[in-house]
Image (tube, rainbow, N blue to C red):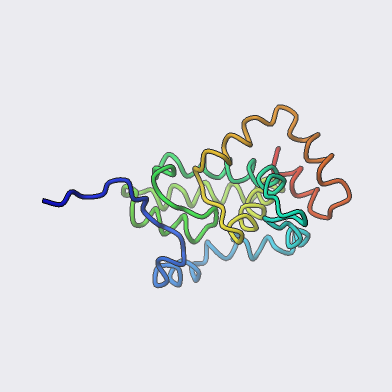
Length: 176
């Protein structure tokens, strides 16, 4: 008798649910505070790449971990982010909430998302998360959370490692 594999993570990434992604993309609320609306405010994030010139990812983890962790904390009350593969972007989060969360979660998270998009710091979090999602980041991954939590002096570390980089202002805003 075969047993069910209970260790498989659910995959709520947009690429896994193309129909749902197309539905979410067109919603009025996703276009007002989605990453596209924020791209013009933080265009420098295009230079933030997961793998640096030396082939390492440590600086990328340092750069995106505060934003991805903050967004993960906003999603965690609705969905188990440790057991589900959710990209840190609006469409994927909404798909996961529609598929996995209780009634009312979508509307509740929408109001949280709208509040996040009202401040410059919140928009920086959204923009950094969008950039992180493009390079494969997921909410609830321990290494990202631990990187964010061990950052007693995160602002200074970002200043040192990203001095002169055009994406430094967005990384500093994500901390606030």
